Length: 277
Image 1 (tube, rainbow, N blue to C red):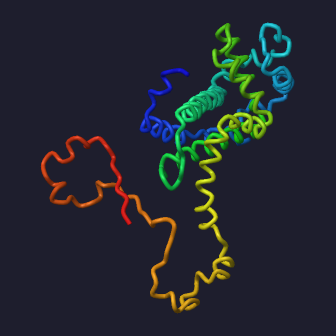
Image 2 (tube, rainbow, N blue to C red):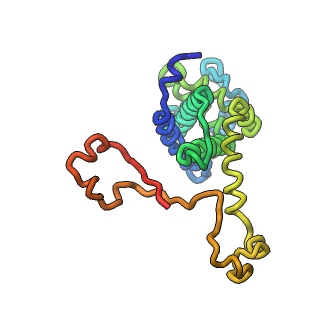
Image 3 (spheres, one colour):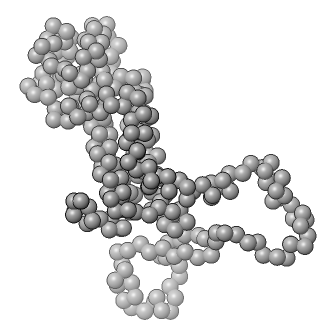
């Protein structure tokens, strides 16, 4: 196994999970889906045949052999290139995000990380957030009806202007084809990570089930009644979990020991958290 994989310690992985789970392209992808933000030339009759041909041939697009079908595109290539730049690079960002998610998930599996919401809450939560964010991005990507036209048009104009295709286009075109059926592709991608994902979800099951009872269920269990069990009113309530709260240690008033000069010298750059009942 590659030795560099062990260079990741727990803090490195936790930071990587936090950063990756906060990287969301949902807003940018929703902009691509909005018909009102679609460039004006998409609705022009002169462009209709060119766009249909690009979608049909996608991703195998060679402008030199398609000149007769791309006359209107060649005429307005500069305007099309400028208008579609933001769309194209959003798709490239999604592709790079997918690469980082792949690498991070493989590193987590190779490092045999342990996920349990009761033991390492932040680590487990960020892992689940990453999965949700990634799945959301992929599903949104697959719902952009004009994704092939947007990418294909940009590729054609880029090649007309620069004489060569963009370096990211071959992989991007392949990725778009792979996610024609996003659910099936997601199942294939998470197949190798079934153990980690399953253990994580199982650790959440008890808390989720307990905290999502309906009001009728609570009434049936007489959780709203103070007199359902008079004999037990003075007895303490037992629970398998301790009620905890997470608070930044910086918000606590300093104790006499903590007020000594230099107490925080070695921890100035750290964000320590205290769990208290």
